[in-house]
Amino acid sequence: MHTVIYSQAARKDLKSLPGDLSKRIFSAVGAIKKDPYSYVKKIKGSAKCPIHSLRVGDFRVIMTIEGDRMIIFVIEAGPRSTMYRKY
Image (cartoon, rainbow, N blue to C red; front, top):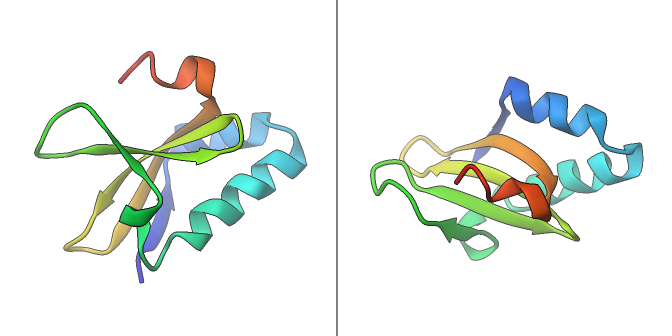
């Protein structure tokens, strides 16, 4: 089972969302702890530190998954229309 760590930016993003939506995102991230690779999509980027995206309705959660240390590091969460611009 993986451990989930939220970055400061991800916490800020989740606080700015409506309460029911942020609960859905927390729940979705918690649900993928056992086998995250079957639920996420890899985003193009560095091979050393691949970035993944989890879809929660019209919103996306950007994260890295460190398999050897069993950690899911949530980087950002927000609407699909703005999430992929940085990556």
